[in-house]
Amino acid sequence: MKLELRRIHIKDIQLGNETAVKDGVLTVNAEELINLLKEDERIKDVKIDVARPGEKTRIIPVKDVIEPRVKIEGKGKGFPGVTSKMEQAGEGKVNVLYGAAVVTVGDIVGFQEGVIDMWGEGAKWTPFSKTYNLVVDITPVEGLQPHIHEETVRLAGLKAAEYVGEAGRDVEPDEVLVYEMGSHAEESKKYPDLPKVVYVEMLISQGLLHDGYVYGVNTQQILPTLLHPNEEIDGAVISGNCVAACDKITTYQHQNNSVILDLYEQHGKTINFLGVILTPELTTLDGKFRTCDYTAKLCKMLGADGVIVSEEGYGNPDSDLLMICKRLENAGIKTVLITDECSGWDGMSQPLADTTKEAVAVVSTGNVSHVVTLEPADKVIGDDKAIATLAGGWEGCLEEDGFMKCELNAVIGSTSEIGYHYCTAKLY
Image (cartoon, rainbow, N blue to C red; front, side):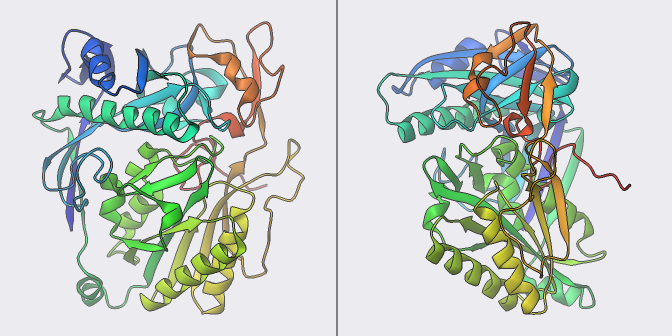
């Protein structure tokens, strides 16, 4: 498969009478977009706003973030199986409005939504303080069941991203990134002496609005599945969950999965990258044994010498992470884990809910319980009082003077376990 991501660098977003890109400025016709989204009879109202890096703007409660794109050549347009008919993603040419993002905001159904601050202390913790954000605030009609409410809001965000992405269809890119990889046989013939590496990406699949989607299929319903890495970065995997904001993998982060892009960078140089195994994180014991055994089997069948495993969420998924590690290490496959920690406000609590002696190489993406103090905003898009009911917030954490205290739990992307954030480590 060969995929070209043709980046058009976006330097600002404006609202205007047309939707177009000129000289790096994305202009969006808000009225036209609102009318498009309100074609869904489940949507009562839509508001459009813009948040720029450095502005004292707070966005809350955030549901998802999506990168606007348009496929100009090849199959699998948009989000196949969701917003378009089912076609194979991963090949062709895609124009990307790089530096822009569509951010969806809406009433809380699941309590685990998040906050984005575009300035100050909060901006240090979320990667989406650096993007030019078109914020789509969606109000569904009254009386929808929770799953239908969430489906309505998230589908509207995907449609908005596709609408905006069309503005880049005929624009020449500022840079072109090429991702190309043949069959396992072809790549192994080219790189016979390089270690074979597989990426296992765990996805929340727990029901109760805690689910990811692959080609529109709820991951609760799949066995661990092998994907070409191009498929994920071309829109085959989307977020559909209300897990803690800090480590939910937004659709934008699937489109720009840091682990995939870093492994691609080393492919043919230091490793032979074999592909991505998407592994559902289930809640039943039988389900965990089934998916962990199946994941290890696929890695062994592929002949992997090394495996990187990233988690989504924390708590009971820690068990899946370590069960996979144990199986792989006992099979002689070197395994590296990527996870965040739930270590308490003082950082002294047990970081993971489970442990195993085979976990000898673990990358931490930060403590979800770390408390930050966010300055008062000049502008709030959404409802800042929502922080009291978000994971990581509490009643009274929004003070009368506008200061807000919360755990990183509440900050979108702050401890992302695929590494798409600004946390780092220090050696003492």
